[in-house]
Image 1 (cartoon, helix red, strand yellow):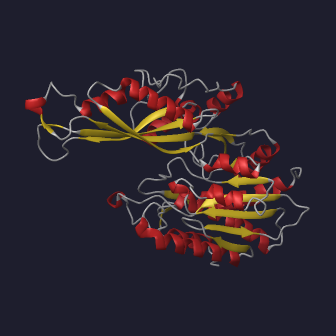
Image 2 (cartoon, helix red, strand yellow):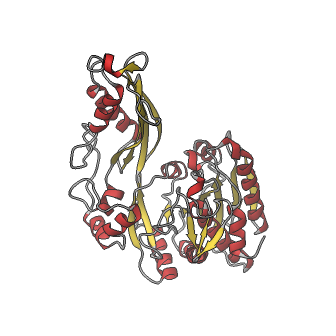
Image 3 (cartoon, helix red, strand yellow):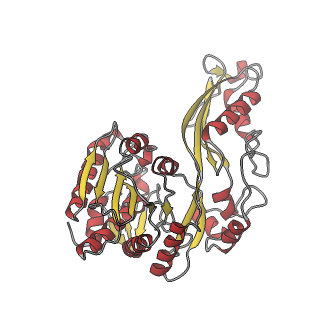
Length: 446
């Protein structure tokens, strides 16, 4: 293996392992094979396990029954890099600028998972690994981890562990240690809105036939009250209030509303009243329009009444909400609001359960001590707004609540052009892996 950590990371980043795009199937498989070779080179028993999609890469130390076993999860697939013209340098040609490595996947998730691999590699080279380690690195996280649950079920005994560590979340502020104890779930749907059998002359038929584009706009508007609260009946029924300690943690977080506004590039924030934006992002559910279309899109005007329109939406969910129930409520609401003369076709999309764990559990406290040791200050406790749907599956099948110790800087631009990973975070991640494994080794074995 290349003994230069940054060089190894750059080699990893050169693979265009875009799981969503069939033209990158060979790149994605080649990345899995490279990763398996890296795990083998550092002294692990490495295997490539086929799935109906992309392979799962496993790397395991020889199991010592007197030690705790820690499973470290990550993914080698990345988001599509488009639009290419917005990248300062090509997305699969890693470039170092101002102390950061720029490339697709630099933060999400290649830099973070490689930091763990190199931390274990260094400990193994010194014969100083205090726990058994299993690396489980999949190639389909960015497309919903559709084959991972079946893999976990099939290999449940081989993957038996006492703790699960994941670095695929963010820091509350640049260089500030952060333990994420909650992630929102997700439920997606697409709504197609139909009216006449074909596009109509808007002068001849306007005023006599319902316009699907107008109907789509009215349906979208019906999803929220003017103050930002979701207007779907029953939407908040299962939502639990934030505990006092959570509101205190949010208030003390180095992530401030003004930082969120700066990162988003907006002049003013907006959202559900009664909560800071830090609280809204992590602890409150949402309904968001992700795409909308219908009618003529070309230059100039074309006076048609379109035959159809569409919109795509996702709901971010918090603890105790379930994707199926929320989609049921949304469908019932949209159908109740559907104007006369309009027909809806609603396609339910992917979903994932929200995740919540206790940061004061023995393993949570071990993670906090490791973060404090490496970064020199107590970590922020954060509820993050994104979703990792497979977390609940890990919890259900393997019986462990994952520990989320993110290394992503707030301005890492994950999923966007110019994604980047600070070199300092990469090296801190290597040290954090070793501190975490030492701390977890001292927690009582189940």
